[in-house]
Length: 278
Image 1 (cartoon, rainbow, N blue to C red):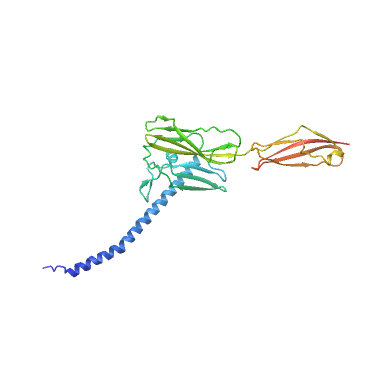
Image 2: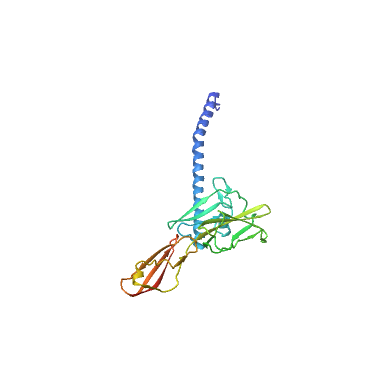
């Protein structure tokens, strides 16, 4: 005949099991959290790899430049799964989360910003594709025509009602980086795409003067060779001008070099004939 447990023994077993749970539970939770963290980091690295692939297929930013994309743009390009999730929360990563490709002194870095509100199923939201380049260059004080986006609803019908905002306020007369956000809504579902616009100055200044210059020996020493030249730059800024000459104290034909440099480091040189008479 089996002997039954006494009440004291049962209480002892319960106490022992409780103690084991108190010891094991934190270890289990810690182990699970560690696994989630590892999966999360793996997912982030996967997103960075997708950005690298996008860059290899599209554009590489120049030194000091940044390309900004939304997660939905990577989905549109087929570079990430449409149901990509955050392993920590088991929720979809926001379609409007910001991803950046950064060129810092010719070293490419990738930045993932999880902030965003659009966690809808990608199959429910309208598609949106940036026309032209996601990184667009504009010459300062030039012209810029936004190419917009191509947006379609779930039935592949074009959507023409697109909200466009640029921050900071776009000013083609000022060098800088601007970010255009395109937002499309259909059946209460929204999708977002980004375009980076870089206003830059790549053109050298323009130097003009009437033509060859004729001076006497007595005039050469005190003549201001900048007095009759005109220098303009597309930036509208003041331009630094230097003058180099090889004129001796004898009559003859000489050459004067004008060199103009703008604030962006663009230069232009122009030679002028100088005839020195007795």
